[in-house]
Image (tube, rainbow, N blue to C red; front, side, top):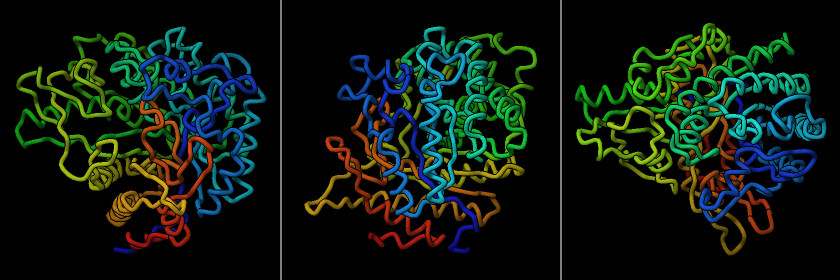
Length: 471
């Protein structure tokens, strides 16, 4: 098997607006659901919020220069909806758009390809007040927003992503309530899932409407590699049900124009799905140019003979408010093996399996790994350097899985490390560090970790350095 990656393979890093930008009240920006949620007592660890985050809004030039120094060839960022369309309706706020124009200009000046994500969980609060994603109108507002951003940045940005991880938006936001807006309503979460799908389809059409020659539109799904505890028929059925709720509920209509065969029956005690309108599936099933996959850890499930024993893994919710509507009788088990500080098992084979699965399911779509990474308890040493050999080993294992998938026929065009730098990690506040660049949260100084240097060397050479090659 070749040790190198295809010519033109993108070596990138990813971030999201609310996690890094700060400046939440500048240049006309209004609150998003994450502003509201993070200021709700008890919602976020240690009362953290994104008011300042890591101040990327003011430090973006230095951050882009650091990306170039590290050797990155691409940067995936998200646009703050409430920064460019403060009420979630109406005309764009030019001051907000100007920030992204400056950011894209800076990236292009340094030879770094921008990849733009339209939505990374930060719905304008005014739209949530009107009902949020469980309301159909939000999908139409999202399409309007997509057109505004497309018109402003389409002449500079080639690659576009509509949604990042709609599963999290729907089920962590509206079912388990551990993410913004913090609602715990299973029926609302299923409506939200459908309207996120509809928003994706409408936004894709809107982008092509304002950018007729655009042929680089995708979605980023946190597709789950679901495995059974045993080979029993009951456990295999549990796998299918969770696969439908984790994967098929989004990739079914997006990629194939239909929801999974058993999904409606499996969730019938929660909703009758009457909110799926005539023509919705055709509107959702728009042509995509590639598919983004986000992966961190596999999911291990079994049938729960005693429903009271069912539990969800840390990060996926609790049995009291489950992020899996209609799956209260399924147990989630911790896969064996080494774990990150998120308590997620390190298993690169799950990434390989996902890449091969989608390579076979949609062989006409190029694939990108749009998020992959690990949180560890990184700390500076006495000399100020930050060594993170665990993250290097994690990256080496998962990038090797990508290379193996390419060797076995998958058309994989790029990899985006999550994350470029330590930042606001949603409900975990500032407790979990995913970054390849260490951020001192007091001074906001940036220090590349050993993993950043290692990854940069891989990007420059197009092949993986030895795992113990710590610079």
